[in-house]
Image 1 (tube, one colour):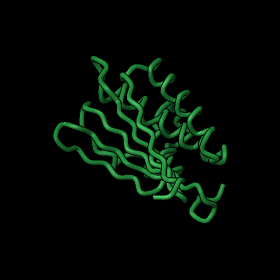
Image 2 (cartoon, rainbow, N blue to C red):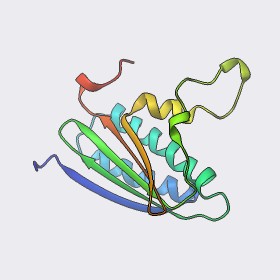
Image 3 (cartoon, helix red, strand yellow):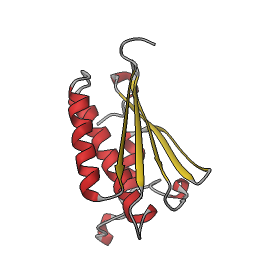
Length: 145
């Protein structure tokens, strides 16, 4: 491993206030990693969507734990999010953007996640939801904006 391979592990309760604190901690960490700000912002947006979805849909009655592991490599931020909430099937979500003429408030989260990340995978194993994705941090693997 090179010096650029850094691992950050964070854990929070599935409550919106706790998620905000965790994302602030992540922002501070990313500020020390020499990652371009727009890519750190992409990660922050994706994590806010994922973790909020866990709170709303995975832990609808009582908050549970959300664990986050972030590995920084030379070319990407690899993220793993683990929770013990209700299982789901993301393969049917966010393949296309919702129809804006329907004026839906929700439904954009998975579309945003799929467009800002690469290598999205999900599995439910041993009572845990494990969502993994990569945010490229080099220009050659970024989607055009």
